[in-house]
Image 1 (cartoon, rainbow, N blue to C red):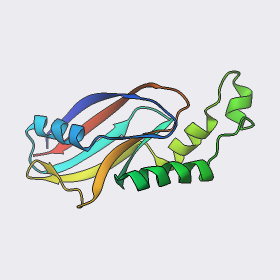
Image 2 (spheres, rainbow, N blue to C red):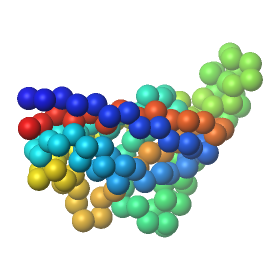
Image 3 (spheres, rainbow, N blue to C red):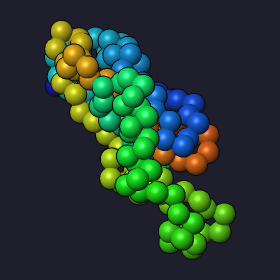
Image 4 (cartoon, rainbow, N blue to C red):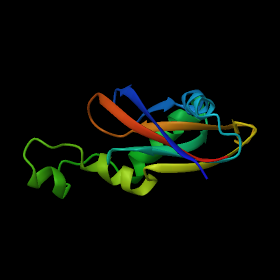
Length: 140
C-alpha cells in the first residue's frame, strides 16, 4: 500500500490561535492521487495540537476559554521556574493533553469528515512562530 508524505508550514500567532487546515489537508490528499485510505496529520511541536472541531466563532471562543480554565498560564510552573526566560509551561501541558496528531479516513479522494467536522491546528504557545505539519497518506 503506497505511503506519501506532504509537509505543510503555517505562520501562527500563539495564544491559543485556531487555524482551520481542512482545505490544505484536502489539497495535500488530492495531490497524492490516492483514492481510499487514511490520512494522518501530525504537528511537529510540543506547544501546538491538531484536532477536529465544529469550526464556528462561538466554539473557537469556548475552546480558548476551556484551555485557559483547565491549564492556566502560571509563572510558578516548574518549566518556567527552571528555565530562565520561559513562560510557556502551560502551552506544553495543553499540547500534551490534546495531542499532536489526528487520523482521518478518506474515500473517493475526499476526507470523510462529518457534516460539521473541520480539522484545525491550535497554537498554545506564547509567541508567534512557524508551525510544521506532516500530512501522511496511506492508501490506494
